Length: 442
Image (cartoon, one colour):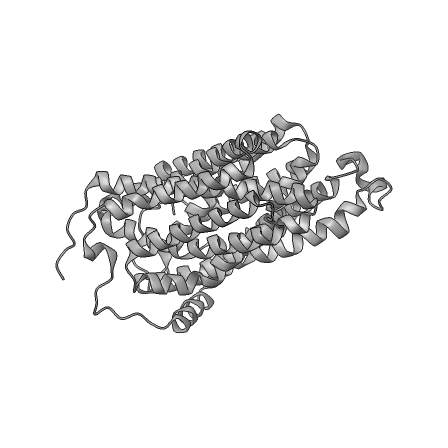
């Protein structure tokens, strides 16, 4: 097979900037829709449904989308995905202008955007791996992570400000425009066919066979299976309270404060992404996973106990600073230990298992908050005599208790995981694994 033609650096940067712009626009709408839904309904469950719609379709379609991306033209997959997301924002804007917008419209359009993202993200990841020289892939992946962190850093604060100036209508129009602009580099840049489609003679195993092969390999490695289980449970605990951040903060502060705290988390994520890109993780990568998970668990406890905005900003920074290091270290472990011919299958299986925890957590978080913990911590609630002195009472204090419980369980999970020998000794390469690769951020 002849090598694919070289790809100009400025063209790669233009495509990357276009996708970052699309991410920023989607981040503006995601933040604004969550605030609008909660303020319109006053119901945590309704807000949680928006979060569920934003994650569940992508998780369910992820393996199928990845298989189809290997067969289709990646340029058009990305263009059509961005177009679908842009049309969804325009539809929401039209409903809002006509006074017909209802919360269920937000669920449907958010699900459409999630579906589009399930195709766009793997297409972009594969395109990056084909147009960027192998020796620069680490830097390119670092840029992708930095772009994601920047979208989280800028979008919440900007969205909170724009909500007061131009409202949800203006934000939806900005989102649609950003998605259109994000597709222009893809349409205008000359990209060789070798970068856009797989070789015509390349065979792809059936999806179910790929999933079974990945699962069988993990079952044969107790250490890897323990790592995946640890990440899945951690995702579930984090997801249970992640969906409740907005209701918690708005129970004692305004939207601008919420945006500032979310931005503090974005700064932390950016810092963690830069650190893992330059550092590569600790010598014993499993220590990076477990050590920074302890930090994240402690941060969740602090969120429940604190109401001072500066303290919460510091806690948000610390929590999100640790996430890229946990993700980067765990990804590097998989890259080192899993044979090359099985990596795609194992990664897809891993992503499905860990990703499925988020919609499950989102589904139960709202009802638990609305019907169990919030009533228990309301004035005169049954838990107020026991916990009121530490957490206070009234609106949002039941959610604060959920943060404390999730953080405590995360700390317990991490401490118990350090006692499991196969996980502790995971650094040793498996007999059929390739030689270790340098640790890179995902």
